[in-house]
Image 1 (cartoon, rainbow, N blue to C red):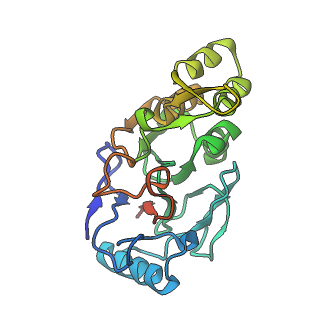
Image 2: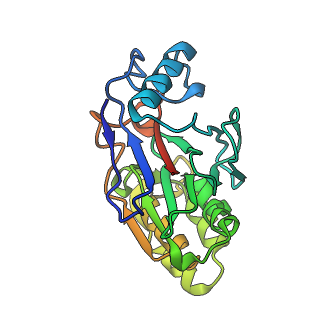
Length: 254
């Protein structure tokens, strides 16, 4: 099974992986390691993919899955419960696996340097602008200086065209003029216009996440160099394909 191991200096007792689309059982257009239940794929195929992944990784428990809604709700994972509504989970219990699924949105994995708390975040533009990262860090209740973050595969700026409302959502959410200016640098104006002659922008999800993490006090940030849209061989991309599968980003400690 083809998986990615984040390249970051996490403590030795912290384990993290990010799946690709390879070596599962799902048929096209979800081929083949689709881990998203709400994609139109056969539920049996998705369950089989999760079983095979769990077995190969020897996961300590069934992952805490989320019913992701592009919001800012964070849940504390205390056991392997059925999927609950939220876009981030965290745990301070050894052996509990936090997981999010994505196909262009940004998965963020977080742990502390002591290896005693971990989190996974589903961070699309809506969640980022609504405060999903800040809410998660607040609930971790540890010093941000002790946290590190890994930015998993997401759509890159050159492929992420958005409308003016996306840029405005971030500028409006900025807590200070300085943060507003930093958000502004994450958008490049294009020559394209919609039917109402409104300008389009190219948005940098990685850059936006870094601004938000830095503002929250997290300075140890890694990853942010894999584009889901460009890499058809390895990654699902909703923007590219529409009807498609989902990768999973998992983290736990022992």
